[in-house]
Length: 633
Image 1 (cartoon, one colour):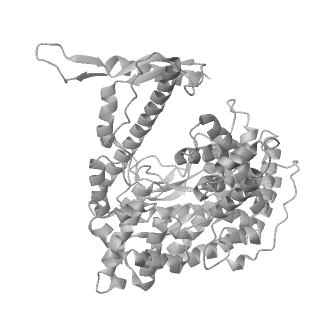
Image 2 (tube, one colour; image 1 turned 180 degrees about the vertical axis):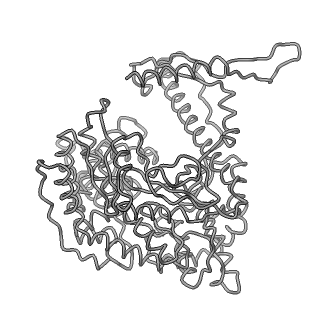
Image 3 (tube, one colour; image 1 turned 60 degrees about the horizontal axis):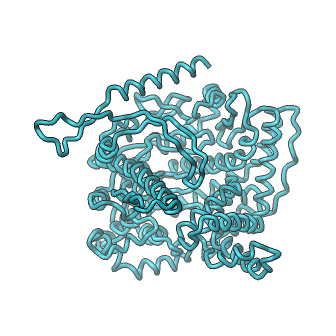
């Protein structure tokens, strides 16, 4: 307690010194014979705050506010901030232990433990032999050489200089703050306060996103003339791999992914040209990515004029690329395809572009493989078909069917009938997608409600706040019901995992397990009193964390196999990247490794590990599983 007290006291004193010594002055409208307008850069004051303007209960908080001049200057100067963990110009050090690897001189840790001493102790004491494959996989990911796509960077810089607010770039202007109404009418004043609160919230979010964009662009500008650079990788406590540089990396947004390409180029070849076209269709999305391969190829052929125009004149042309779901990546692919098709030998054109092979609702794919359920496997594309299954559209159809039935009921006996009538024409793939994606990771009813509420807000059809809330509650309930109808086996396994965690947490123990690649995992969730585990969090978080540990194992196994096959490889959890010419080789490898992973007795090993680590505790029996043949993948 004394150490924490001293830390707080030191931090308070440093803030006090900052307030006392930092000043700004505004030269605007200053005449030579008047003293300069010098004022504190930061001020401490108390501010009455409510969670939203409609709540009357206020609470005073001490806040540090910066002068508007400081806030305005940050938009321009954030690019000059010091970032020690930049991409490396030489390959990272090989991992050999908890703090042995990664950057040459900066402190580097193989796991992001976020202060969990139990996890740190386990990682420091684990045998190097047990971690060999994890070390090698992280080394392989770190040895992938990248470079900045300079043509894309020039386009981004031009759009950003023009004010942003295009291709996913944040608007560089703030929204105006509404003026106070001239009439002191209580209702009008309350509505005005609500609009002011919303505008200020939007402006704060915009400021944060502008700073983030400036940081990403500053890294790209610093690295654009480098022949290549590397990203050292480490893992989170579940084993998922991340680049140690946090701003411009391939795990980030479309902007970053469009700006990055492999430093090594490889000839497209015939298969690469084929996959480059499919890649454009996938990036364009909007339902195109769900067509058969022939349908996606036909889409690209029908839009070759738009693709050429996008490559030749991305800013002043017809801007077809802006209609894509991932516009900057789509533009990069348009440029590469245009270069190839205009060449006398398209198959010989060198491509640096990473081509993606993504999982289809990957968490549910892992549950389907664990449960060997044939219907669930087909729903998430573990079974080959001419046209890919779309689980999000399937759930949307079921939600619509349930609401259609509800809308025909008597509103007097069934109040949700009115909500069903309001929502029935608003149900689409986008409305349910996030909830379906996160259901496998333990999304709660409240989480699902908030996800759907945000989508309904975006549609703008329901403007009344109270109706919006009740509609979101009803839609979330129906969506979760529809999910249970399709993915019953997944929910049984999810429940079994949660029950095991409940048994362990009831003894004030954190849930521990070892991934198939030998990484020891300790769930870090504790209450404020560090000696007590958070039993509720231990239980709810274990199913998604366990699935994350499996998808990370699959990605690492794929990375090692691609290294051995001399493929350039990058992984983004459930998305696998390589050169266009090597997509078919990588696709074969990732399927092979998925089968290898789930040919292991994963749940049996997990239960055995629990019984060994927690002797004396009684765990529920293993759930029943189906007879799906993994060789059909």
